[in-house]
Amino acid sequence: MSEQRQWSVGIVLFDEVEVLDFAGPFEVFSVAAYEHHVAKDEGFPFIVRTVSEAGVMISACNGLKVQPDYSFANAPHFDIVVVPGGWGAREREIHNESMIRWIQTRAPLTELMTSVCTGSLLLAKAGLLDEKRATTHWASYERFESEFPTVQVVRDVKYVDEGNLLTSGGISAGIHMSFHIVRRLLGVDIARSTAKRMEYDIIFEDDTDV
Image (cartoon, rainbow, N blue to C red; front, side, top):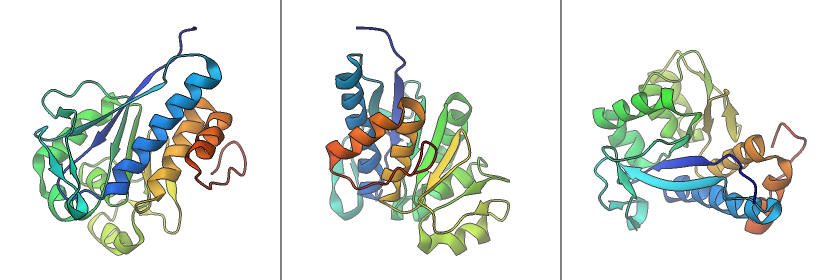
């Protein structure tokens, strides 16, 4: 079995996080790791873990309880960070200095800092999106533009790729963004086989755009 690159993925959790915002990317990266392992007879390219501020069980939207793997204090290095959205992001975490500081601290150390839905508001609050293109849930376009006028808000797209910063639209759009990342890192064939395994209908128009 040959050596190959492995990326550590850290998905941020907090109370009232939107479930599919974090569960969608978790599934895509996890299934892609399995598909690559089987197809290439190599190790698993993604190791997916969760992290929250205190490391204690969180209550996601609609009451789903989730136990994070790490706290901010003991979390390891992550190559890819996913910041989800939801009510907790736009109403609570955007005012949480510990959350914003953690994002600011981690951003220079990651290869890809990403957001789903209103998680983009947290990236913007951390100053990561100044003078960059970004998107969010359609219901938060106006708020995004009003509170962060230096960000170029892109409407009606699934995701925006700014190199090492990626933002996606609402909820299920995080799945599209995750497939795009899989294709960037592992190629279109693994992205397609992952979509087939998940029975997720996604159109790969070419090798650069989903």
